Image (tube, helix red, strand yellow):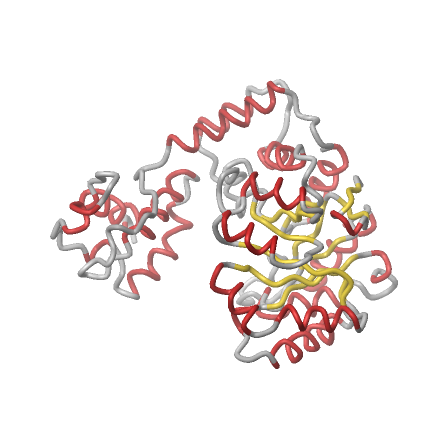
Length: 380
C-alpha cells in the first residue's frame, strides 16, 4: 500500500483511508451495521496496509465508533491511526466538548485518538466553535495526551476555508474533492493552499457519494470503454484525485469486500503525477459531458428569494441539476419529497413572476420549476 506524509506531522499514512460512514448494514435492519461483514472488511484493509480509519460521533447513529472499536481489537489498534470528529453543531455549551469527547473514547475503547477533527465546519459552525471555546478544549486534551493531532473537515466557500486555515495551527484538514468538484467548496485552490501551509489534506467524496460510478450516462460509459487503458469509473476517479501530490490520503466509504479489494489495488498504483496528458484529457471530457447535462444555469445567488409561496427555488434547481447530471432522478426523489412535506416544493409555485424579475441570469424560473416538479413526481 502506497504511503504519503500527512503534512507537517510527517506521519506516514496509507493513501487509502477506510471511511466508516457507509458500512454494510443488515437487510431490513434500519441502518443496523452488519458487524461481522464490516469488521472483516476493515481488518482485510488493515492487513493490506491501510492504517487510517475515519469515523465520527454521528455516523450510523453513533454506532460507527462502536464498530471501529470492535474492529481494532485483537492487536489491530497498534497498526492503525484512528480519526474521529467533534459534532460542533450538537454543542449547547462549552462543557459539552468534554462530555462528547469522553463518550467517543468509551465507544472506541481507546485511551487516545490519533487524529481529532472538528466536524463539517462552515462559517456558522466555525464561529460557534470559537464562541464555545472548542479550540481551547483541543489544546487541553492534546496536552493531556488524549489526542495527537488536530484538524477539521469542511463544507463551505473557499474564502471561509482560508479563514479557518489561517486561524489556528492545524495539523490536517478534510475536504470534498473529485474531478467534478475541482472548483467547489475548498476545491483545488483550497487543496493547494492548505498544503502550502503544511497541513495534511484528507480527501472525502472522491467518487462524489458514488455518483461517478453508478447510473452512468451512456456517453460516459462509451468514453471510458473506448479509452486506451481499461479502467473502471471508480479507478478513473480515484486516480485523478491521487494524481495531485498535495493529497495526503483518500477516504473511501466501502460497504462490499469487492470495493475493498479494488481500492487496495488502485491505491497501490496511483502515484502523484502519474496520469498522462491523454488520460487527464479523457477525464476532462467526462466532466464536460456531465456538465452539459445541467438543466438550469442557476448560480445560487438567491436574488429570487424570499418566494411569496416559500418555494425553495435555488435548492430545487440544485437538486434538479444533480439528478440530471448523474442520471439519478429515482435516487433524488426522497430528497424532493422532504421539500413537499415542508411545503417548499415547486408545486407551490403560482407563477406570480416576482422571481423572474429579480433573476440576474434571466432564467425562466416558472417554466424550469414546472419541469423540475414533473421530473421529481413522475410515476410517484
